[in-house]
Image (cartoon, rainbow, N blue to C red):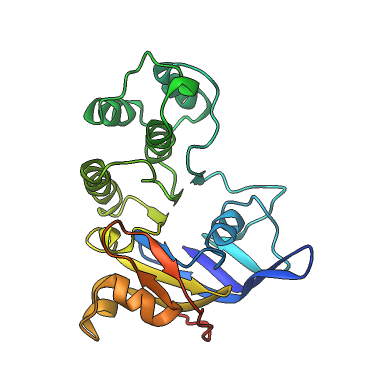
Length: 253
């Protein structure tokens, strides 16, 4: 279980990235984390991964408080096209298996084959989208209790994105663990996510089931997001124009 208790994170210059967030994530499955640019999504993930300390409050995984001096070993946090050792993809898989006894090498190889990754290519020679796929592959194969994916489909074409979402659903839609996906491609994730977390202005403005939240007012996920945050869906490519924000009270379930 993941728990945020009145978590606030302030950066230098009095910038408040998270403001009194309280929520409990009890169920396994796929969660989509939505918010406009600067809403606090990346800070949310970095706190959960033990990369940065909170200013006040506390974040917990399975009852253990997260500490930057003792980062949680059961969490995999993958940022978009994260830098990797400039090894061949095959060697990166073997390296990951060597440092993580629970790493599922066979699943990694299955992903590589499914998405046509050339195992003999070195990481630095790959395109942006392929680098993202490699880092995501390593995260999904880690067998961690919690996997945090920050914009995992950037650089993917529409067909590859759908195939990736199906893979994510197959992997984490069967009670394997908790996968939290931060994305701006909002309506694409709607068919694959179980739960929805929307943050704006550093606060939680909605935490609910995706289906229940959208069916309540007969909205698409993009329309719901726009209503709560002021983000306007451009429609044709999933990008957003950001308008005036909405700051609501934190919501806990």
